[in-house]
Every structure is written in structure tokens, then in C-alpha cells.
Amino acid sequence: NDTSMQHRNLNHMTREERFSEAMRRTLYALKVLLPREGWTPVGPEMKYLARAIKEFTFIIHAGVFIPCIMSYGTNEQIAKWFPLAADFRIIGTYAQTELGHGSFLRGLETIATYDRANQEFIINCPKITAMKWWPGDMGKSANHVLLMAELVIDGKKYGMHGFMVQIRDLTTHEPLPGVTVGDIGAKLSFESVDNGFLYLQNVRIPRENLLSKLSEVHPDGTYIKKGNQRLMYGSMVRVRVNLIAHEIVMPLAKACTIAVRYSAVRRQGLINPSKEEVPVLDYVAQQHKLLPQVATVFMAHFAAKQLVKMHHDYSLEVEKGNTSQLPELHALSAGMKACLSEQGAAGAEIVRRACGGHGYSCGSGLPFIVNRMLATCTYEGENTVMQLQCARYLIKCADQAKKDKLTGSVWYLSDFSNMSCTAQTFGDLQEPSVLVKLHERRAKCAVQHAGKKMQNMVKNGTPAHDAWNMMATLLINAARAHIMQYVVGTSVTYISELSCSASLKKILTQLCALYALHNINSNCGDFVKFGCLTSAQCDLAQEAEFNLLKQLRPDAVGIVDSFDFTDDILQSCLGAYDGNVYERLFEWAKQAPMNKTEVHQDSYQYLQPYLHEGRDVLEGRGRNSKL
Ligand SMILES: CCCCCCCC/C=C\CCCCC/C=C/C(=O)SCCNC(=O)CCNC(=O)[C@H](O)C(C)(C)COP(=O)(O)OP(=O)(O)OC[C@H]1O[C@@H](n2cnc3c(N)ncnc32)[C@H](O)[C@@H]1OP(=O)(O)O
Ligand SMILES: Cc1cc2nc3c(=O)[nH]c(=O)nc-3n(C[C@H](O)[C@H](O)[C@H](O)COP(=O)(O)OP(=O)(O)OC[C@H]3O[C@@H](n4cnc5c(N)ncnc54)[C@H](O)[C@@H]3O)c2cc1C
Image (cartoon, rainbow, N blue to C red; front, side, top):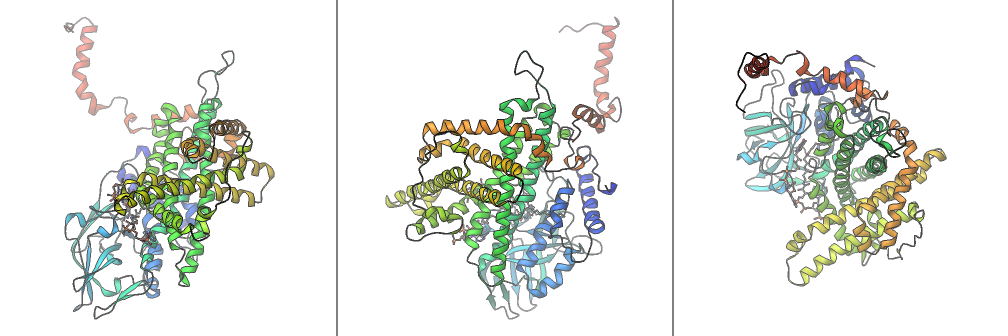
């Protein structure tokens, strides 16, 4: 209710206005509304803030830079930099990606050379491709970066390490000597974020600025490893875990709220010719577009909660020096981020398109969501790279399953029980336990199929790396199948253990079955190819999905209302709670800058001569053209 938090119409603002407005609002929220003892930008308030603000800035500062200080810094370094960063007295970003490399981290070219005489690191981007490119908050906001660079001592390379580098003067905010920094320009979305470029030339930093939890350099240049170097990748794992809730589940929930509410209001066409125009939500085709996406919101939310818990438990173990869970967590977080961002981004576009022309208007609030969700398929690990990382782990586990009984998320790879499906009716296929078994069997077969293909290629003399490359599509499918069985399995368990009313549990169970059946029907080739379902059972699976659409239709609006987004957050003429779509669209359009004058003079000057000729002809004073 604080007017300082109300959103002006973003679509009618310039990019620079949106950048400034997001910064004002974010700092107001964090510094005025929220401050109390012990609050940090990585605390539980973030989920409320991420709900309460449509566009905020300092996402990387709060979501990546600060957590990295905690992950990579020694206690002394945390004590020095965390309070400054948590209180926004320094603004940082996570500078890893370069103009020439983003996925292949071993290819990063920025160098940090140790200067023993001065006990400093000399940071250099040796060529243009080494320039840091993309980091959020870096173009105009950050005065520090957590720079990921190749450590070099006496000509020997030690791999990627994290360095705290100040890039702007703390008084003038001007770039420091040797620093060329700026905004990378207009993007598909994230208009309010200053993703930037950073070119460093002979920038010197103290030896103490190497974040040294995992390794350190002594004054004489001796390099000491202090733990599992894979933990250097830890920041990416944590962000992949966290971004699912913030950047996939929540935006998709907003898009579904808008599209379902609008579909309940928009009347268009007839089903029964003798009756009146129907709300488009009555079309089964529309239900088939929208309701599986609503189900995805819930299932992704439940699976993400489980992944966050797994990451929390893992972090406690790492503190005790036990990093054994890292490979599984890396594979799961990489796979979940990739598969759920793929589903979420596609789902947001499906529901946008289901809103017809008004879904193409920025006044719907949907293009903003769709464009922003597209970024989740690329940042924090491009999806293909992530799916292949997940597949790499699955293939290893499938080999291990031949001799060991596996546990954790891959336990099903060593389950050799009879997994044939005996479903005789579509009701059988709505049973959670049947759906879980089907997904486990499909995933197991997909992993084994990819592995077998590669083994046969290698047996026939193909080098392993070529076999991997040629079977990449099968490996990606195996990763997707693994994640789908994880999402369905964890959701079924979560719902069964949820203490809630029977009516709510019924709805959640239906949504879970809808999500699983929609996935089966969208991938029935796999389910038949791997012998999970017969062709007749595939027909039953379709019937089962359609039956659930019918059962869920009456509660569709109530279900999205339960996401509880305010009109101010949705910023949607189609999704406002009162359903006054047309009045809101007209008011919104009238506020467009194009309409601040009746005649748009800048363009009219070009048109005027021709219009006056036309006027003269029509008023009998001019000659008509020969056309
Ligand atoms: C004020 C409001 C604030 C609100 C806050 C809201 C919070 C919301 C949260 C987030 C918002 C979103 C913001 C995101 C912004 C985006 C940031 C970025 O994009 S940062 C840059 C991200 N870049 C990447 O992810 C790079 C992807 N590439 C890689 O990770 C690597 O290339 C690679 C995958 C590691 C592959 O490299 P390489 O070829 O060297 O490795 P491999 O040979 O394949 O594997 C080597 C072994 O290492 C293991 N491995 C790989 N990665 C990891 C890992 N991450 N953790 C652990 N182990 C890892 C791999 O498994 C191999 O092991 P073995 O199989 O050999 O045992
Ligand atoms: C909105 C946004 C915000 C970002 N924020 C940050 C940030 O704060 N900090 C930061 O450091 N970075 C950030 N990034 C950069 C992001 O991490 C990289 O874009 C991402 O890691 C992909 O790397 P790349 O762009 O170099 O693509 P590349 O690695 O060049 O990949 C290009 C394409 O090649 C293919 N490909 C690449 N490798 C393989 C492979 N091994 N197998 C098969 N196909 C492959 C894929 O199709 C891929 O899409 C951001 C990016 C975006 C879009």
C-alpha cells in the first residue's frame, strides 16, 4: 500500500527511466521498508521482495555476488566484504562470462598474474574476447566485481579463481584506471538491468583479494589448495537451485493467472449454435493449453522445494568437509534448471498465445513475462550444456547400477523389478503411483538406450568423445526424462505428505496427474518405444488427460487466484482481479506516449503535403492522379 512501491506503467517508460526507477524502488524496499537486525539480501524476505516488485535491480548483487563472498571467502574476507555488500555500501556483480566464452569455463581468457615483488595480482584481458560481457548490474551500478580469472604464478596456470576487484571510485563512481566499463545495450528483456562489459588492462589488486576459502597464494607465491576445487563451481549450483522458484515458477504463475482470468472473461464464438457466446475457457482446446501450465507451476514449485532442501542439507555437509553429494546435486540442479526453464518459457508463450491479439499487447503483461523467461534458458548455464552435464552423471550412474544398488535421485536405474503397466482404464492412468512408475521406467530406458548406443559405437572403433557428440540428442532426452521422473515423483510424495483439506489434496492430486499425463501424451513415442505403454494405453492416457481438464475447469480461476498476485504486480489489463478487461485496455492505450497529443507532429510533417493534395481533389480544387 506504500505509494512509493506502486509501479508506473513500465511499457510507457524509456529503458533509462526503467533502470533508474527499478533502482529507486529496490533500494526503497530494501533500505526503508525492510531494514531490521539480521536482515540480509539473501534471506527469506527475498521471495516476498521478488513477488512485490515487478522490476528490481541488484539481482546479481543480491542473488550471486553476496552468496559468492560467503562461498569463496575466508572468514576474514567475509567479515570485511559481506557487511558492506549486504548494506549496499558496495555494489558487486559476478563477472565470469566473457565476450568469447560463456559455457566452456576452461576457455576463459582473463588472467590474474601474481606479482611477488609487490604481493599483488595484475589483472588483464589480453584480447577483446577476454573482455567480461553480460554480468548483471555491471554496466553502470557495480563498483566491485567478483572476477573469475585464470590464476598464473611464474608462468604456471592454476585454473579459474575468484578475485575481488574494485572497478569504480567510491566517491565519484568513475571507472578506475585500467578499467573500461559500460552497458552492453538493448536486450530481449531485463530492460531495468545494466548488464555490462568490462575490459581490464593492468589492474592491480592486493594478494588478499583472492577469495581464499578453497585455495590461497602465500606472499612468496606458493599456491595452496584447501579443498575440493569443484566447489569453485558452487555459486552456479546455488543460483540454479534458487532461480527455479524466482525466475521460473513465479513468472509462470503470473502468466497463468493472467491467461486463465482473461479466458474466463473473454467470450468468443459458439459451442452450441443455439446458445450464447462462450468464455474461451470453455473450449477444451483452450483448457488443454492453459491447465497443464497451471499444473506445471505447482509441480515445479514442489520439486524446487525439494531441491532447495537438498542443497541446504548438502551445504551443511560441505561445512563438515563432506562434498560427496556434489556430483548428484550438480547434475540435478543443472538438469532441473534446464528442463524447467525450457518448460516454463514454452508454457508462458503457450498461454500468451492463447490470449489472442490482446495477448500480444504489452498491456496484457504477458510479453514482459515471456521475454524475461526466455533468458532462463541461457543464463546460469545454457540449457543444452546443462542437460549434457546431467546426462554425463546419468551415464556414469547407469554403469555403476550394473554392480551397485543406487540411492538418491538415480535409485530407479538399479530397480530391476517388473515395471510393465497393467492399466486397463483411463482411471488407472490417473493413479499417482502408476504415473510415477511410468516415468521411472521411461527415464531408465532412455538413459540405458543412450548409453548402449555409445557403447556400441565405441566397440566399433569410434572414439568415446565422438560417440558422446553424435549421441548428444539421445543424452539430452535422457536428462529430460530423468528430470520429469524426479518432478513427478517428488510432487506425488510432497502432496501425499501435505497436511491440508481433502478437497485441496484432491485438486493438487488432479493437477499432479494432469502434469504427468500431459508429459506422457507429449512424449508418447518414448513411452511406446521403451515398452512402457501399449498403443491402446496411449489412447487411455489421452482420455485420462481430457477427463482431468473437464474436472479442473470449474476450479481454474480459483486455482490461479490462489497465487495471490496483486493487480499492481501483474500489471495486466487482461488479468486484473475485477475482470474489467476492455475498460482497462482502453485506459492503458490512452496513456501511451503516442497519444499525449491528438496529432503526432513529428510524423505529420511528412504526411501533410499528400493529405492536403487529397483534400484539394476531394473538394474539387485539384486534379486526380493517373493511378
Ligand atoms: C534485490 C532483489 C534480489 C532478488 C534476488 C532473487 C534471486 C534470484 C536468483 C537468481 C536470479 C537469476 C540471475 C542469474 C544471472 C546469470 C548469471 C550467470 O549466467 S553467471 C555465469 C553462468 N555460467 C555458467 O553456468 C557456465 C556453464 N558452464 C559450466 O558450468 C562449465 O562449462 C562446465 C559445465 C563445468 C563444463 O566445463 P568443463 O568442460 O570444464 O567441465 P566437464 O569436463 O564437463 O566437467 C568437469 C567435471 O566438473 C564437474 N562439474 C561441472 N560443473 C560443476 C558444478 N557446477 N558443480 C560441481 N561439479 C561440476 C563435472 O560433473 C565433471 O565432473 P566429472 O564427471 O569429471 O567427475
Ligand atoms: C540475461 C542474462 C544475464 C546474464 N548474467 C550473467 C552474469 O551476471 N554473470 C555472468 O558471468 N554471465 C551472465 N550471463 C551470461 C550467461 O551465463 C552465458 O550467456 C551462458 O553461460 C551461455 O554462454 P554463451 O552466451 O557464451 O554461449 P556459448 O557457450 O557460446 O553457447 C552458444 C551455443 O552453443 C551451443 N553449445 C555451447 N556449448 C555446447 C556444448 N558443450 N555442447 C553442445 N552445444 C553447445 C549451445 O546451443 C549454446 O546456446 C547472462 C546472460 C544473460 C542472457
